[in-house]
Length: 360
Image (cartoon, rainbow, N blue to C red):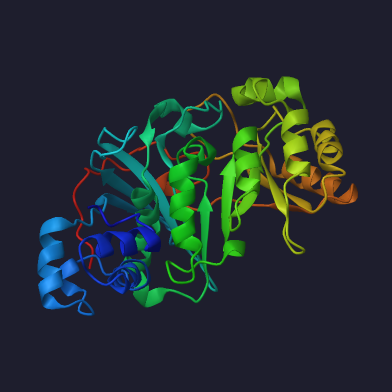
């Protein structure tokens, strides 16, 4: 029995099936997700006899930290090694990345939901990998637990989680939501829903399924274009779910009284960063309710694009505000270690060899 990624109900049922009190499942759930205790032998709330039995009949399989790349801004890009899973779609060993970003009042963890990605956004280096495999719920949750444990002495009270690493979350919906139920559970990892954001390229059926979830992350749409012709070129998924269909799904997505739908717009120099683009974006999001636009200047990589000028970024931002659209310019962190938005592609930095690093 693999325990990592199991819900509290699954653990309770399994323990009851072993002839143990169901509340032992609650104790394991708390030890694993709240206390970040990854050794069954050290779960001292359990009787010694049960710990011995679980050591024979259960496992807690953590990703291997193959390498850490530390940015000059304090961000850490983790390269995780994943073993082959036992579920359909997870049969291959794989590598995946997550990024830990400390700030004065919070820490943000950017996690992956697939190894590689099948969506093929033309400006994103992860797309060059193709899809390797889906991640399990346990592999997704572990990308949060391991950095939190490693940095436990420096954590602030607020943790933000963004599903913006490798992969398209809504193409691995069941595993992603199984992980998010643990992350958002006050008795689990305990991150507040308002501090978790799921970013999608625009998988409309997945957006509609997410809307039906009782507890869910906030929604972010990776827009990156101001019309269908442009988006077809930059994001081929648009040919399947064009802007009208995507924006209708956003219009119907339920949001709380203080909740926004975020539109992410990667600015590509000379491609989608003109004043006309800015005005078209403002028209696209008009009438969608509470929305905001995050402008992200493109982060350099081995792709045929260039960064926008500071002037074009500032003008794009100004026009959105002038048109009544809340807008923010987000400069990505960790660029020097290939940890920034769109850069996650299993790249080594500075010729470092991949070595196993033990957690403290």
